[in-house]
Length: 460
Image 1 (tube, rainbow, N blue to C red):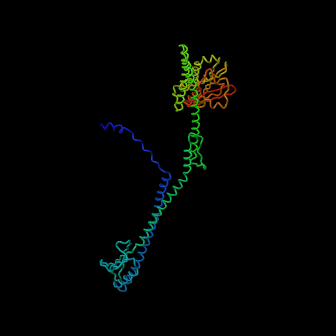
Image 2: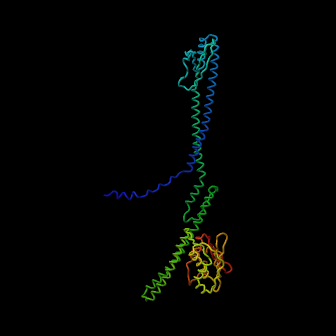
Image 3: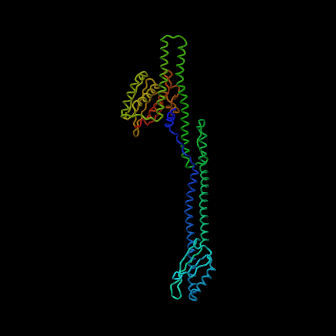
């Protein structure tokens, strides 16, 4: 068996990325503050320990100086009275009354005059402090050299206890700060946990729910407002999507029902070639209508994804309007309408898209204009590089409550503005709004006193 053939697919497979490590804000803050507290307290208590050590050292040095001064005075008096014998007697007498010290005296030639026989501590190993001194001789010969050592074992033990106490205090302070911080952070993060619980409770059936806190938190309020605004947009979009799906199903159901009905009727009995041709022509019209709906929906979906218009060289809007009016010459003459174009502006735009938007506006105006009236096309340059284009007609007015929804998909204001003999699928003005957005503009509509103005803006 060829094992390489089995192994080769595995070698090319990408390993799944490991999930990111999660961490607790409370634990991390507690650890960081505990470390900062330990470092801060450690530095502070180290300074305190250093000061205590200097106090012990100063005390020991003062004790050495005082006792060495006493020794010098006592030995000078003894030397004056009885020489070395008297000095030895005094040194032995002082050794009995001063435990924790060690005294050694040397002559000028280096020979030992005196040494404490039984000191109460280990002179070489125990913690101690030493001082050298000289004792002048009464006969004027070279002075004696003395060595004084005091036992510092008790001070060293005190220092160790103090150091241990300071270390324990530092660790205890760090531990307390860590616990207090963790508890405080958990209490402070309680609003976040509440928001997380509220967020988990939101589902498709509860899109109207919004995040709230019993006590507003200044740092969280912008996040709450942004999330609530997002949910409001999601709810509105979801409602529009449901309505859009229902409208699409309704619009496609009619031509499908016509296709099915006509086909069933055609198949119910034998038909002549002419009759079958009529059925095919009728079915073709329904299929073309369905294709138009699908194409328009695909265009709107592309516009919703944020696709921008491909702008060409600046062209005259009045010239573009004239071309669109010429294309609609037949329905204009049929309705005995006249068209007036007012204003002009040169602007870089996607000419086919703008012609499509103008054609939809003009076709809409022709469809609802009173017979024998005048259509107006107004080109107005606004502030900055924006250009507004209006198409107005005289005809049935649109109720004010319907104007905001005029550019919604499949929206029809009322039966008065629907032509049963020439039905349309209600995406024309939605396409106008999409083309306006693709040019960084927006649509607009006005209707009052029998005159309706519908248009859009283009941003250079």
